[in-house]
Length: 204
Image (tube, rainbow, N blue to C red):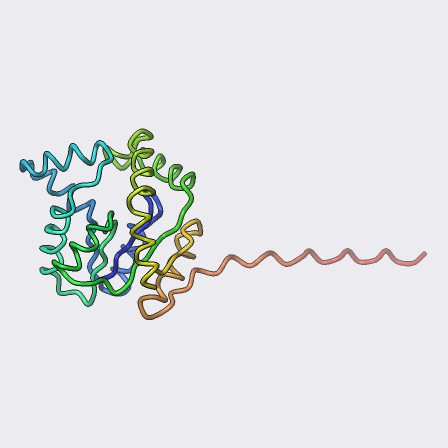
């Protein structure tokens, strides 16, 4: 199990999709599992939906329960747990219920870059939390509650930090080395050859 952390809009989901495609791992997003529970219209789902809309963190035992069920049903060589743990107590709950993670993949990205990405995504995503008010709440929640999780694992020397401001291909070239082989970013197009110098004018 590898935990994948990063602020909203840092590119976690995109990178996880590529790891799944190239390495055959399963990818479980804590947010997707919670949203699926919301769509089930269960009483628990209604409570989760209200918390997501308000930018709050869902109680850890609910998220851990959903993740445990998903991981136990996996037959893949490894599992990516995306967007979790969101708080230090969730890390402890997960270790007790499921086991320790192998390492933590942290996508480091400035808030202004993430905000621009999320507002662009919100034009087509249909997600209720891709609007400026929810985005601001999600940033604050991430900094206040999830960054201490990154620090907690960094103190255990378990964090691989990736600069997420690079292009998707450049980020993935770094990420893929952690999973056994480097998948390089496509080479940039070569610069055009300089124009041939004009022939000197004939001497008079």
